[in-house]
Image 1 (cartoon, rainbow, N blue to C red):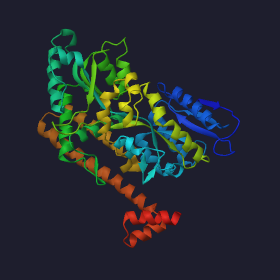
Image 2: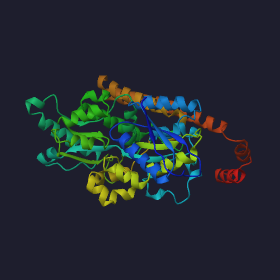
Image 3: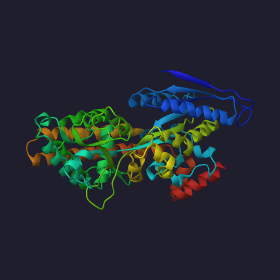
Length: 464
């Protein structure tokens, strides 16, 4: 890994006479590294200290980043102070993260200005362990020119999307050059984390949930209807190649002009509107639609957060740095480069909207964003997510080969029930670990019949 050392020297030190060297991880995709270096420059000048900050650039593949973090934190290493973390990893590593509220005053952070799903993701086990650097959300892209050409409105439901996609697909395929190349809809169904993202948001839009009240609910009627709809799309408006599509594969198909609708992340907007693409200026966006009119739209929460390792020797300095990096002013600067702010107020900020009017279109998606079940599965999240994406990919793949509708429905029910049992087994492990980790005071008060609120209150008194 490449390491970049940034040193600044000034007359006096911040937070006392101590001078420290902080180590922070950062992804190098897009402008992230450049923007982080610039922000760190500002922080050190602002604090007037002789502090040093060493940036450790992360591997491009998120699974490699995850493995690296697991290695560091399992070893209780204090070599890295600040970790840039995918929102889905916060619950996994929460036991190894510092409680940031220990270093902030009550008015330091305006929590009500965060989108609800973002605010919820900042907490794990009652501790504030992360602050959002930027957020992300699944959205739907569409070809404005094709909807105008065939006089079709923007779909308000999944069924309307299917009907519009099928109609335009069939019409466009009358052109011999597009007969076997043009499709109504592309999404990501590769057996990988991206399929978990797609599945969580479409299940939510059908009124279902992966976890409800601590129990798996993937064998519900809502999830069944959702899977049946995905199979309908696969057979009617999608290339079967989507079973091996990641984000960039879907973008390639849509950007080359070969699809009407595409589910993807906001990052694709600026790339598709580059003047060199065939769809530049012809693309619109709307939230992931509900299953029926009157229900809420959806979109799975993405984005990257900043956390402080509880093994850091410089937690108070690290907390101050990430408070600065994740501030509203820094998110305003980052928004000029298409990084979505986590603050609701910035989506009404003229400065932000002038730099990228596209943000107006994604606010609704962020308002209704649904989180992946990382806080439910905690350190077992990767196992839970793997069970989800492997099962869903298998259901979709098998549906292509099964001949009768009856056999398809039977296979779906069986696989969802099996998945439900596996997820409940994981949740049971989480509960067992939680009980083992409870302190003597908590276990004794629980045995005596005190409520969770009373236990938490007395725990604070004992700490003080």
